[in-house]
Length: 401
Image (cartoon, rainbow, N blue to C red):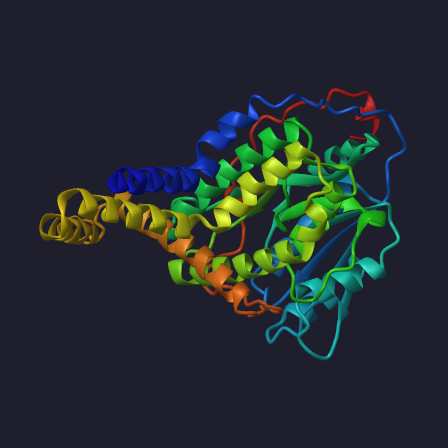
């Protein structure tokens, strides 16, 4: 009886670990559809906001991209907060004062505080959030704004593409993970709202912007506020952003650990409000966020229960050596210099980074500021992959697309 119970526990925890990446995307296909109701309306005013820290290598391409966006949408405004960079980021941006309004303070304060300052200085209908190293397809801006003609839409998540998916084991893993993430966001959106936005490209109505504590993940709390206010956070497959993935696994490990800590702290900040969401959004949140944060611990629990089940069934004399042999064989196999093994090893490293980020959050650690990875080249749109064929908007609002 005990071996069977342990085996069942191993199966349950293992299935929970895999659920967000396998059964959950399939289950979303069963949810009722909520089509958008886009209308022909006056185009809203908009400001594009981003924060920068030591992004001198990316700023020339960023400025060229902003000028291309203004060519498409002349009324677009641009604001940037520079968080006490030690390179030429501030000088490069101030040299483009005809294009970008730049803000800074005398000390490092972090992205959340920087964004809060930029929002306070903005008075447009829509706020578009992005990163200093991210480039947008210029023609996507009118398409993004068209979504807000639906009065139920409070926020838009764009679609991010990595331009160097095969550059290293770290980029292979990050790119594969993100392609799945974009598919899940699209399926969630089809039934109402997606759960949270990535900071590379998303937009909200100005009036929805919340008070964001300096040590929380501002992208997450700002985008989830849309859902908590009863409006839709929609994934836009025709709004394209481009970024280069971090090349070095160690840099990506630190980045994921920092993001996981801030995300889980944000979850604890919001948890009193989460039950106000619809049952469908609560189920999405648990599947898309909560279970993923606990992923590495679920995987380790599954392995532990499986090992204990083998020992309980075979006895200590046979079971313990068998578990030790299987564990040693897995460790040796993980060291094989094969591409699939290296990719799997890198994926496990990133799961471990998320798990450590949760431990950081439990211990009260905060990550208010961030650093720019050294091994991440700037985006070159000339070699970026062509965006997929956009899903057409079923609306007469094309007058301002």
